Length: 447
Ligand code: 4AD
Ligand code: MG
Image (cartoon, rainbow, N blue to C red):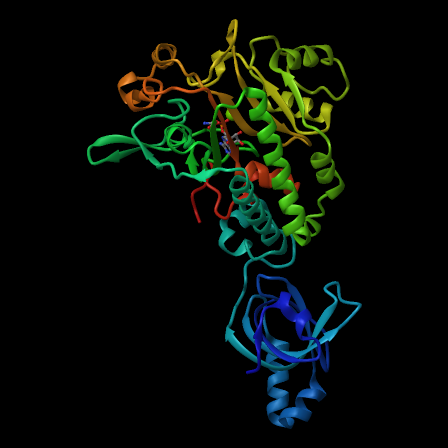
């Protein structure tokens, strides 16, 4: 076989005979002509086979046999296909392959996912195959671009990657959403966030970040919740809360830009409005206090588009409230200074107001909800100790975390971004389940 290349590389080989390893995504044509829609993960590409050319090259018998092999290829068969790369203005990709030879690698009988419409449950049961479809491949490429941009941003901003453990002896966020496991006769928990460990790393290395799977035994069955998802946590010393928000804003903009730069075809496949994405980069994010947001919701409660429950100061937002707020502003919006009562134990109170904490949730526009949770951390040993007790946690489990306030405590802040929420938002898809290769949800752990 000749020169083996991938589909994205065909532009460098116009006029040459090349061989591509690929899957048959679809097939059409009749009589003496066959069209193959080829897919190799890098792109889609059309190959054309013309029977007389095969007979001319291989003789009547072998030529006919090879041409018939192509005609009989079923969806998702794997092949080595050889041909001459032609520029072709009619094809969306700009190139086409004039097929000169074929070798079947693996057959594929009765592939379950046909080009017709399928229900979500069926597709989810076949997630291992569904990943091959155009839209799902685009989702994974966007995910990849965000991960790449995240590493790049942290590296360029002086952060050190510091890996937090997944098995832990204590809760990072709360005790109601913990997956417990047996650790040689003692209880251990799957990490909800690497934050507490990052705080230790921050005191050794300055700016640190982690990126790994985290787990929440949340019985929520919404389009925003997974039980296993990937989180980027970052932690940094000596920044004020406002500077922390500046950093988060720059980070989210860098992630969106990273997708525009590295996965434009994926955005096109998903029909994403890139003008909106560019607007989120160009315009400053909004910053609103929790109390002002409540006032705004109360003020607009009778508006036509306000399909949320009545809300009072001291109540937590539901998704309809979050959706309405972010749509109102039209750009990503930080809600700052939530009531301490529904936030985690480690947050520092607003000076002079113990009821509110120096925290922010970043709400994405277009109804995507919270993509970042972050805060300034309590630095005082006694106050933190009391918060741990008030939250019904055992200070003995947190002795190491309290030590960080005993030996050279410093002002510090950090945040965590949920990767799949970010992917869903940038991709403009409705449900978070398509943002991760194998989603784990309330009623799903297979495949
Ligand atoms: O707001 P959360 O719970 O914050 C923390 O865990 C902090 N310890 C982070 C930190 O300060 N280092 O979670 C952070 C983000 C949320 O904003 C959301 O994007 C995502 O994680 N998230 C989920 N994503 C999918 N499914 C779920 N069940 C999620 N829960 C949180
Ligand atoms: Mg949160």
